[in-house]
Image (cartoon, rainbow, N blue to C red; front, side, top):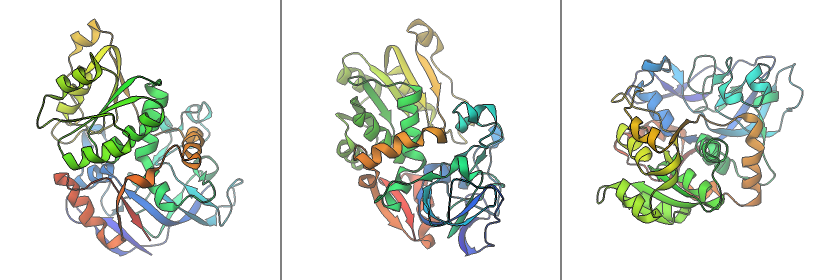
Amino acid sequence: MKAAVLREYGEPLEVTAVPEPDLEPHGVVVEVEACGVCRSDWHAWQGHGEWADDRVPTDFVLGHEPAGTVVSVGDRVESVAEGDRIAVPFNLGCGACGECLNGHGNTCLDGRALGFERSAPGAFAERVHVPHADYNAMPLPEGVAPRDVAALGCRFMTAFHALAHRADVAAGEWVAVHGCGGVGLSAVHVADAMGARVVAVDVDDGKLGRARAAGADVTVNSRDVDPVAGIEAATGGGADVSLDALGRAETCRNSVRCLRGRGRHVQVGLTTDAERGEVSLPTDAMTRWEIDFLGSRGMPPTRYGELLGLLESGDLDPGSLVGREVPLAEVPQRLAAMTEYETEGVEVLTF
């Protein structure tokens, strides 16, 4: 089969023939119909994460937002059959440890990260293996397009878990979103669907236009105004919840600083090699105003049905954020375009 393979960090992925996935007894093989192209793939391609022992290997297939059809089933799988259409969370739980059994498969101690570690090759490929399929294979609602599910990908599930489960956003609250790439636009759309009022921050007017279309009530171009002052003015004193979707020290600190008393910051964006996993914070002010700092990673597979239900009902429309569909041969170029933030909206590999 063909796949896009990481040979050297920062060098174009090589689209080439690779062996078919090995089928584990507890796993399934999926014919990939669509896979999101995400900024986390860019981080992996750049070789980021060594400071957290989280660097992807070379000679490896990236891609972690697939949807497709099951074509092979391991002999220990009970709830998934050939022909089933599924989505696949990138944070793959083992389904048996305490974290998984308590509904926290995204922090499974024995879990695998699809497209990020040797034991879970990714989905920039014609087919991909999904381990522990009874726990990790998410059945798709009827009539939902694979492209839309791939756009849902890690960005929507990450944004949904961050806002609904970690920050516990309530209708009427002000939510600030820093960075309007894929996960940022998803956060805008999710917050709007939850009945929150949304301020979107970016340096690109085109991306801010997409944020308005996705449900932002206010947009702030941080090239033109101080984003903290802009958010405080728009919200009458600061956001209730603020999400950093970019992972830069500046956006992380702005996200914390723009909050009103007892506000909740959620960190979603991963840092670059400029920060190397460390960002200094205004801790005295956080103590004075009882600011919460929350980390958020993906979403537990056991709660995926909540998100798919919103997709099926039409409350969420991830397909509306798709800016480009690309064939496998163009994935290397689209990753490179992220270096200078030249992508707009969500980009999806389709077969």
